[in-house]
Length: 123
Image 1: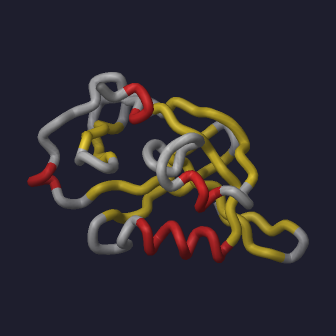
Image 2: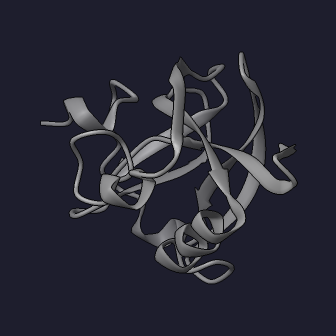
């Protein structure tokens, strides 16, 4: 999760919604290295909140991408995700190492599940 590269702190992050390639917030990861696509163990549930998804503990596998990000990028992502109010960060094991994942906290808004577990394939 915390890696050093050229003396700079690096983190791995698993993104599953608007930060994925081709989505509305992907520009925030333009300078980050995409390590690859990944599908989680069936430990989560993905919900459609309109303009963005919410992820909680559940029984779905979630499709996403793993990136290597620097401290500044991680700080920008935390602002986007409204840490610690709207989302919180936890970790998930990926083939690339342990990565941060954002979990949604307002369970009262979680009504429209995305059955596929893939934000990019939502209807």
